[in-house]
Image (cartoon, rainbow, N blue to C red):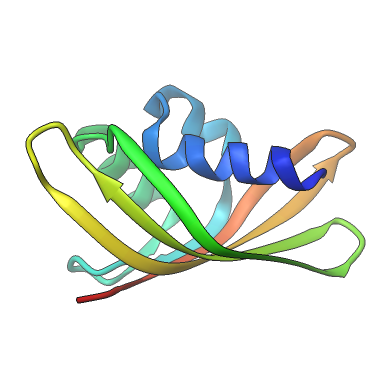
Amino acid sequence: MEDHRAWDIEESLWTGDPAQYPKLIDHECLMVVPADPAIVSAEAALRSMSKGPRWSRVAFTDGHIARPEKGLLVLAYTVQAGRDDGTNYVARCTSTWRRHRHADWRLVQHQQSPQA
């Protein structure tokens, strides 16, 4: 996956339509998020993400991409996110993507560490 596409897909998980999530999140995905329960399965994450308010704007900084082997991509970045109601959020994040088929990539890991 090209770098710009990786960042576009990552951003879509923050701001996009929840209907896309089942196509992007692997059924074996694990996430670590700041809200309880802190460690969530793909199924729990999909339920939670489809109910919660979406972020209306995000900006990624300090972005890094690693490709430890063919078909595996790791993103690390700082996110600054905001909602229309004035809620703001800053976190350091990692996401790991695995290729299933040529252009079919699925999220297998995501972690957020909120920053003060």
